[in-house]
Image (cartoon, rainbow, N blue to C red; front, side, top):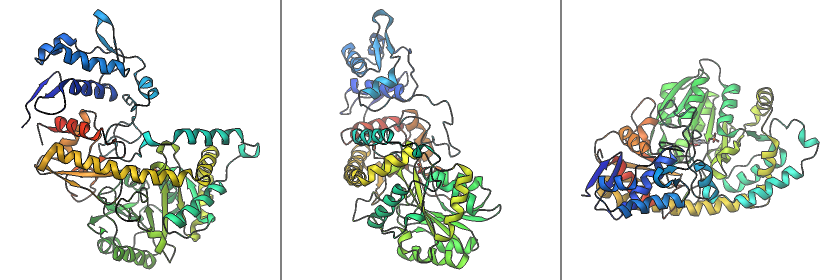
Length: 483
Ligand SMILES: Cc1ncc(COP(=O)(O)O)c(C=O)c1O
């Protein structure tokens, strides 16, 4: 068992292969990144810290020198070592991970988890693609050209249903990548999945209408439905995905079912074929609609990506929702739905009344990115990268925790679940990890009406292979006392 020592909120583990200077460096770096230490704050004097930890002064100096070299701190001679004024900008300019600033608004969702957009990315953050691997040069070139070529006509109101060349590119992409046969007219561009859900709710749900939601589920989907005052019916998920028979038994006459068939969010299981067919049969019989949230269907590491539920939707009951948040990046706020034909006109009308569409420049840039072949290439590259990062994180977790954990590694998706053998609650573990600047989330926080088990949800897409062992050691230290 490793010996550890805690002082001033710094935990040092002695018998580990992470050197002490590295542990000190990591501690202050993450304190700066998550905003615990802010520009102008003073680090403890190197001499005093060395005395307190009974370590050599040179060890602390080495840690401070690394922080200074990366621009996190500046040495002010007798005045000490101070957190740099431009700490966020310095970290970003160097192409290292961006520094994190304390968020002023909306730091927590109703589930207690940080909203994805509330701060810059932290290690293990869920729902983010590998932002460090995005082809920024190509993207700049493509977007700059769109700005230059903007005509006067392009500056008028956009089509509320979306830019036609983008919709055509999406239809072609869905046919080959997701097995969906649809026309350009069926594609409606939205402000991400969140914008799609808002539209769906506005078009389809009336006060008191029942809607099925998976239990556990994606909290923002649940909130969007709850805001529509729909009567929410949480339906349990097992190893085959949504338990459709439970849904039929509990709320046969529901208007809507929101599901994540490719990789259930957050459990990662795939909706089995019999369940898919049962769900479609229920929707036809009940005159209901199904929202298929395919947020990360492209990312499958074992076998080929599964065809979408929409690809076997012969009665046109499925609203397929795709998002560019995972396949490109989330600040685009761009997504789309493939609509059943009977809903096309209503969606166009409601979209015009609500926001009159999505910014045209963004749509043009993404359309060009797709037609020039960058999109397909990027997804292929990311699938390979995520496969390696997923494996590296799983291996590093096992190396760091040994048989205290079981890593629940599904065939696809962008996160894994670590299940602990100890009986400590996952929300306590998640809080400790978050306090150390790690964005682990408790699986149990995703439950709606029934328990869904315990574990930590860890995103692997932003954990570089060589960083994985260091971050796992940090996680061990963060939750050490309780696990
Ligand atoms: C389950 C699920 N669906 C959809 C999305 C994408 O949402 P948006 O397009 O609004 O960014 C996410 C993002 O984290 C998600 O976790």
